[in-house]
Image 1 (spheres, protein in one colour):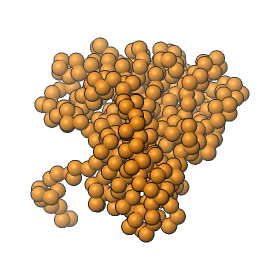
Image 2 (cartoon, helix red, strand yellow):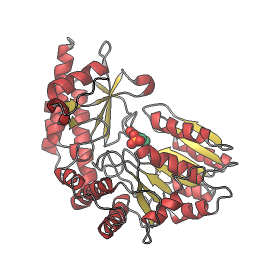
Image 3 (cartoon, protein in one colour):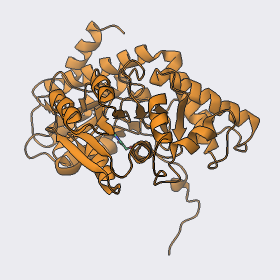
Image 4 (tube, protein in one colour):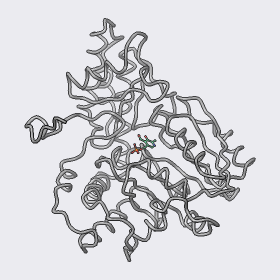
Length: 398
Ligand SMILES: Cc1ncc(COP(=O)(O)O)c(C=O)c1O
């Protein structure tokens, strides 16, 4: 095999403007945290960093849950952990499914032996109908309702308010995927009485990929403690992770020390900015991008009234390849956007408005790139995307 060692062009990754729905760009302070000296995972300074990180996560999740920490793997580990801990043989789970990531929840639940999975389907591009979800909870009295807050595959925000009341009335737990929303979209975990809520480090929090923040209510912890069978996954047994993050820091795994430092710094940036101010910033840039996209003559995919402030989705015009345009933006402007997922992979763009990447200059660059791409394939844009976005910025103050 021909392995090149230390070729100068291979030493550094390119500097990109990350406008896909994750990862987002990281602040220089987060990079700095990644090059702190490596200490042992039982070093007192690192144990203090874990405690800071947990406290910061409580601020961002807006919760008092003691069991609030970060799993040492990507957002999907939060999903897997939440479901394998809450469900056991004989249980029923209701999954609200209107997208790629909700389907992943269905797939995970279907693999769990003896778990009865009830799917409440919805159309891609729309939230799952609230009445259908509520009546499934009443009818099936499940162990849990699993639902995606921000469906990254469609750009839809699923309203969550009021779901917990029905869940709790039927003795069910509310499990929420906030991978694409935590830190960029309103998500008051305690106010909405969410029982298990997980996220990913690389999206609105703007830390590198590889950590999955998670918070677990006392009600959910009691339910996990009362299981009749052990959690099928030893590694993702949440009680063991809770003990690692609690004051006695019982060994479970070797913590990814530098990733925790980076997450802590990213969370400090969120708290310094203010959670509400950060959400307002996401809303502003998503609105500017959405208006710009429509001014270009493109159609947003997510239905009006339910568009996420952290992911904007647009349909590609007939005859245009979403992948070719993504390549053009990457090659010519150094900007990364994403194409669709699943069936819609080449018919749609998904553009992240996340964390440190959610900036006016980046929104303008994406719109300029899309306009250029449309012209390249011989289409005349309906109007100026950049001008429409500029109007939003002129008229909206943060
Ligand atoms: C809503 C949602 N859930 C889960 C995931 C999985 O996260 P990860 O890719 O970090 O494992 C993603 C990733 O994009 C997501 O957007």
